[in-house]
Image (cartoon, rainbow, N blue to C red; front, side, top):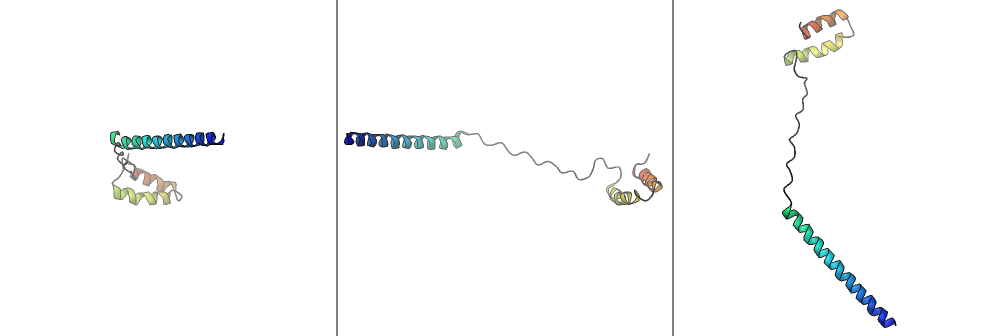
Length: 92
């Protein structure tokens, strides 16, 4: 009885090992075929441009930069100054 069960265990182990070997061989073949038949990956999209300045600029760049800081400073000082800066900044 013990000899028969040992033989069956041996057969089961050999079948298990054979199936495991077949599965690993098949999976390695499938893995190697994926790279060969796969289409090339699409190219990455071009980077988006970074816009730092608002468009369109109401004034030339150097005037825009020179007026931005005084506009922020004068905002707290006087409504009259704001009025004149605004007229120059956005001429009517």
